[in-house]
Length: 479
Ligand code: SF4
Ligand code: FE
Image (tube, rainbow, N blue to C red; front, side, top):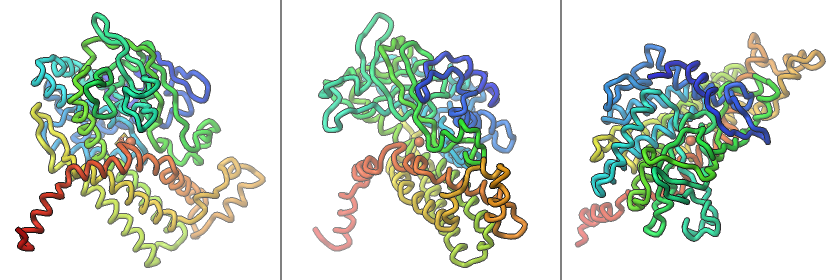
């Protein structure tokens, strides 16, 4: 494993020569840019946390390909125990960062592509799986961060990829050359894209026979010629430029520093192509990736909600309302909802399934149930937090006023509640709650890993209502 610490990770990012655009300017170094620093810090935690002995077992694994110690983020799950460790690792990282640590998208992409390439080769005698294993060894040895690029631009939602007026709205092959392919299109909302070493591309949806050029999976270094990143705005990102540490609420941002990635006639060498034209496998690939990522949300978001529950309880303490019965009741309701989400996520792992490749995947029905619950319970947890914490979370003056001569003493005097607790503490925890519960975090919980309707479609498909009807008929004595 070449990159062993957070510092190694940051140094490696500096060496990438990429085209990243932020607010109209091209940015060279994401480790020193005020806008991107929080996301880099957050992802860096995936490199540093395992070096604390008590977390080593969760953050590291043994490669089934080389027998070497590797980051769990580059591991292919070999058992249900591996799936469980992944869920526990994600909750831990959510607790330590209170934000999206971004590295799971590529992790889930690696696992999905691994099992599916095995199945393609079995059917067509192709060599995708061997290629992918070579790529995986490289990723494991270097300990790289991968951004998993799945979401195409999609254009007119009522039209198939082939029917779009502008074909580039779905990433596709524009030319087959000796030794590789040339691709064009874009992937949107890519979590962690600005601070990943590699891009792993997957199809957005199950392609049809006439959409072979859109049935595509490959990986390229993020500084490949023709790749452009356009960084998305994050709520309150201007506070980062202003250097307002308290107003930022957290040094780790909130969501995953999403980017639009544009592929302008990018050449992908043959050894990096893992699916090209085998459209029948695109549905399986999408489902396996989506299930893996949906099961994560009962882990990373639960870790984040652990921080939120703690922050809410702290505000209650600072206001001296922590012994009030309805406040205690609301806090235990928040814990109840949060642990329900986590239990759901653990079930995805404990009911994991072995694929023909030997790799394990999560139970897809429970994964979709978990994610759908997150879109409801997390909102309720946030509602309860806002109710307890109070309106000050939304109306706090800037830290520049807190530290300014003309206003600082007023802010301290009038924002002090319980005797002995400095107003700064209340402000800091208020800003943390604002950051954890802002619209980007909630929208991410709603639409990240797919929108609720996508989960409902999968639940309809996997829920086996016919079998349940049989159960009812049998007990009711209906022939
Ligand atoms: Fe990982 Fe959660 Fe962020 Fe997805 S939303 S990349 S699972 S931390
Ligand atoms: Fe996400």
